[in-house]
Image (tube, rainbow, N blue to C red):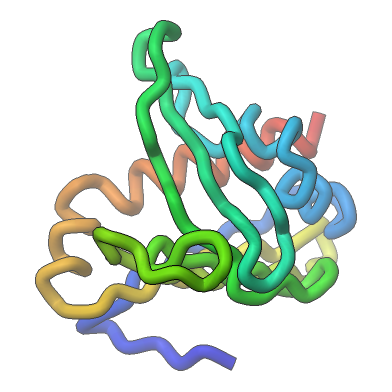
Length: 155
């Protein structure tokens, strides 16, 4: 269990009206993941995907539908079937140190009477990074992405 440190962490959660297996699949399958991961109208492309500890978590973004630019270059730290995904951009594939570390995210999935309780707990290395992430729109951005995930799996 990851404890919350309000000076370093940001969290967001939502009940998604879909079975946990569907929400999990939308996370694990890269062809599904890229349909909801980045706030629309921007596009996501999965460039490296190995949802195993130490495996690649690499995405690119296209703001205008044209050329793609790097978005996340990180790795998975833990992948616990239908329960938890932990990823970071502090390390890249193969546990190699990343050039620019920023955050580690713990995504949890649990059953809820109305579907799936989905929570994202994002940890930062210092208060400045946390504040910058919040000021740059953490709640709006991650909230939009979770709403897109819900729309994808609830349909």
